[in-house]
Image (cartoon, rainbow, N blue to C red; front, side, top):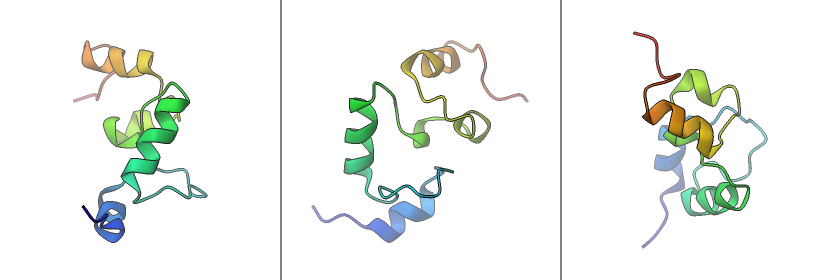
Length: 70
């Protein structure tokens, strides 16, 4: 399978500008898992901007505590 970096970048919501992994999803996921966290794409924008990409923060969102305000 060939990676379509340009298409991936168009959908990437990561706000960390010097990131060298933007659009390279396999590298991004691998990096974040090694850091015991998840990539930006699994978080809503208001949470992603906090750079708290921990499993605990993700669990809070999934359980309905701290998700998007409607």
